[in-house]
Length: 263
Picture 1 (cartoon, rainbow, N blue to C red):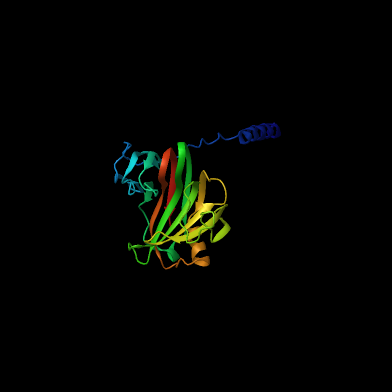
Picture 2 (cartoon, rainbow, N blue to C red):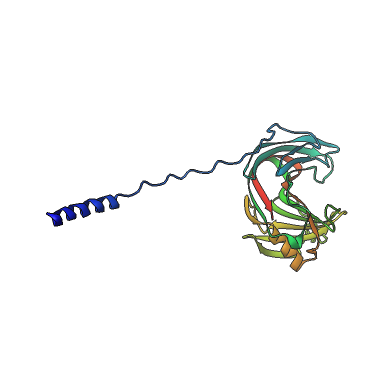
């Protein structure tokens, strides 16, 4: 009787042990969203300041031109900003009319040698009409001192619509000549141009062909490349990190989802 009872007890215990534990239900952490004005802004020097970013409507070249440029923020959640700009320009000078952009507000004025990374993600789409002259680009500035005057401008173009970068050298066809071609950085290939805008030296990375409608990588790789292979001193201070569109003529609506973290 004892042996039989023990066997029944063991079988029951095994059945209990074999019962699978209920699976744990995983829930996503709520996104931390920043309260921000979602109104549309169209003024020449309008800006919307938030904790991580500022939206700037830099319309410095519109004298004599006809048109408008408006922008608005949709949301800012977990350091990711969703925003858009709609612009249309004709007439005036042949130069850039506006650079509507998102400016990073945190961890600037660090020496390039002290920067570990500038991780950024940017996906965008654009609709347009007419012959477009514009770009879609990152715009970084450095200075010899913290918060000082611009010495170098580093542009990383994701799209070029008949605009052309600043260059010291132009070919017989009038097009800028790259100082270096097929540079591999952040998983993409670029042609590098070098020149001056009259105020500071300008390095411009452009896609070797087509456009890059998304970018995810470390912008610091571009600065390190220029310090190692060109004339950008790593003793410079990073004063500005922006992303947006330089508009000259035509009409377009650019919609972006963007983030950047300087460490």
